[in-house]
Length: 125
Length: 110
Image (cartoon, rainbow over all chains, first blue to last red; front, side, top):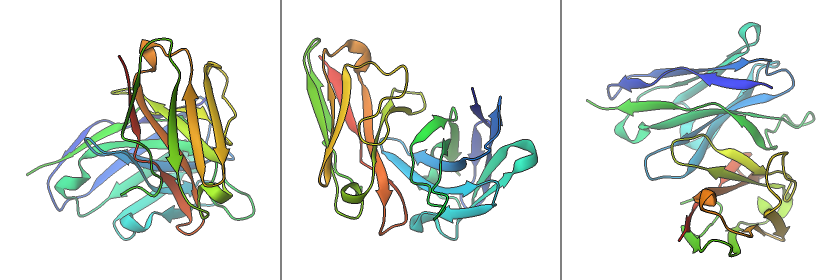
């Protein structure tokens, strides 16, 4: 059974960037996509964007366009999420999650069936 | 403000049946499958339902999902203390071209 293992907690200064990794252990992303979802303290879940590793194509939520970059390394079955121009409101737990995608549209419109353990990112001066 | 609307809280006593609603529009719930997730404090979300009412293996049949028009519901019967968690609905939004979540419902078992 595939597990998604994320990198450890980060503490960053406002204005800096953070890069979080998500490795598929016990398998690969294969015919799946990897998405990033975050939860700020006291808030709900929020989709940031996703990537289909075999194509290398990423899509982003409008809110994060221009500030987030999602990449993947198929050779290591690892997905990455880099968020720049960090502000205090970006303090959150960041999760990667696996999903199937529509082969005709590349839409990531299926369930998030496997999740990483989460990475706490704290933005503080 | 979430695209999908859920009540912020719900509660019940052990053994009771509780229902959590999720309201959307024609561009999301009305034209796509709904998914439900259970999130316990300090843990990652867990998939409870896919394709409106399909349960992944391991999810007890005390849990049921349904969808009608632009709304969906999650029902839990025979409520147990371990059901105390946050529950989120999620679906694809055709206008936004991306997945959207409800604001989450915190379920208390009194």
